Amino acid sequence: MLADEFDRIWEFQQKFYPNILTGNAEKYRYILERKDILPAERLDLKKQFLETVFCQIKHYTIFYQRPLKSPKKYIGKCSYENNRRVAPLSSLDYQEFKVLKQLIDLRYSNADYPEILNQSLDDEQRGKLYTELQKVKKLTFTQAKAILGLPKKSKINTEELGKELLGNTTRAGILEALGEEEFKKSNENELEKLEHVYHLEYIHIFWA
Image (cartoon, rainbow, N blue to C red; front, side, top):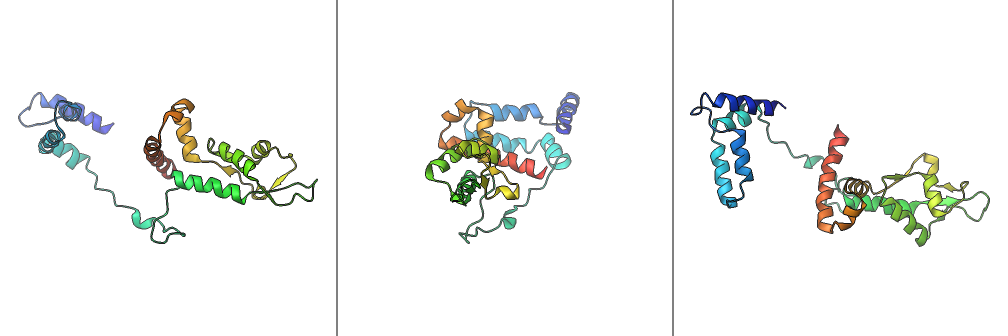
């Protein structure tokens, strides 16, 4: 908002002092949007624009911000591969690992059938839950029991802790934003780009 106000004030004042107040926001946008020049030419024009009074005052005097320091040293080391940093919580790889680990660790019991005690899921049951957890950010145990076809009285081992089954948050978020039809059209490279966008949004929400 302040930067836009500065641009409008500058544009008005420039009418009276065109030889002193060189450069303006419109000229910079023109440089960026021109389609009839090569990348090298555009770079030269950008360098020239950096020398204008507009750029010096706006970007180096009023709205200057020092380069951000890398937080890399605060990122922990992977417990499985000590020479590598941990993946972001929002990465598709981590989300996939999280879902699969829950399915492997999940156990259920049924008080009406003593022989069913801490029973692990079979491949078909895991497949059903896996498919659903790829589409949602979380799943209640009541919903999970319905998907698995288990009686309501069945107990799941993590239910005592008051937890929910966590879905593939990143994939579900991208799916929600794009819609199912557009999501199906996305290839692996496009999903990787969308993952980075979602990661930035995740950081923004986390630190807000």
